[in-house]
Image 1: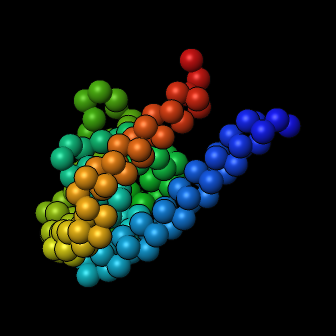
Image 2: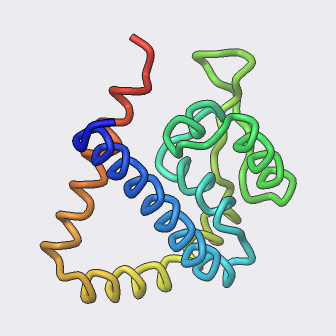
Length: 152
C-alpha cells in the first residue's frame, strides 16, 4: 500500500469514527432534551421530520437517514400514543402520510426551550463562524458520500 492510499484509508477511518462518536453524542443530548416531553430521541426525530409537511414513512427515512422499517415502527408507536396520525396520500394510495397531532405538536413545544438553550451554549462554545464551518463541512461530507454511494 502506498503512503497516499494508507493516508486516505486513515482519513476515511477517522471520518467514520468521528461521525459515529458525534452521532452518539448527539443522541445522548437529544435523549436528554426529549425527556421532559416523555419522548425518545428517535420519536422526536421522526415527529420532527413531519412538523412542516406530512411525509410517507419512506420519505421520513430518506430525510433522516434511517431505515424504512425503523421509521415504520416508530411512526406506528407515535400513532398509537396519539402523537401522530396517518392521512391519505393523494400521490400514492398505499403509502399514507404521517403528520403530527395537536398532542404531538405540544410534545415538541416542550422540547423547544431546552433545545434552544443547548443550541445557544454550543454556538457560544464553538463561536458562530466555527459552528457554520462545521455545518458546511458536514454538508460537504454528506454530499460526497451521496455521490459515491448512490447508484447512477
